[in-house]
Amino acid sequence: MSAAAETEWRIVGEEVGSCNCDWACPCQFESDPTHGDCKTLIGYEVREGHFGETSLNGVRFAEVMAFPGPVYEGNGTKRLIIDEAAAPEQRDAIEQLLSGDYGGTYFEVFASMCPHKQETAIAPIEINTDRERRVASVRVGELGELSIEPIKSPVSGEEHRVRIDLPDGFEFKQAEIANAVRTRVAGAQPLSFTLENTFGQLNPFDWSPA
Image (tube, rainbow, N blue to C red):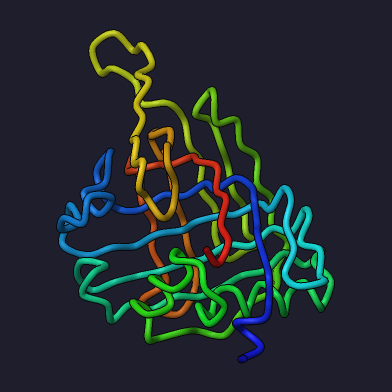
């Protein structure tokens, strides 16, 4: 039996992300992205988790990804950034998880869709999220940042409550949808972009090999 097959793991926590699609993001339904391509910054905070004997409680990490077309067509580029507060064994565990070699549909899908991988970075990561209020921010050192607020009516200014329910979803079962006021990523192309007033997503995650 391979080491991957023998490694038991699970991570539970909060995800905050934005992309260049319009609100609701057609990619969530395996449709073509709003503008034909995909650019995204996602922050993850593990509230409780482990990889084998390694505790992942409190570990934060982020991913930047870019696809020249729809995600399902692949040919994407991604970069993993791990919080500088993570211990060396925790960093190694996160890298192994994101390789897709240890199971977990979410990790397997994006590993297979991103044949181009830039070197993993270590940076201070701050994640503040209030899913109920649809307010969040992510800062990844000098490499990227995003801010999220509720979608507001252009007529009355009142906040809209919008959710996506995916009972069979592999990323989430329910996500709060909001407005990503500004997203900035600084890096080597194609992982360098600035977005304003695009799709924002706040959701819990509970991932394991099963």
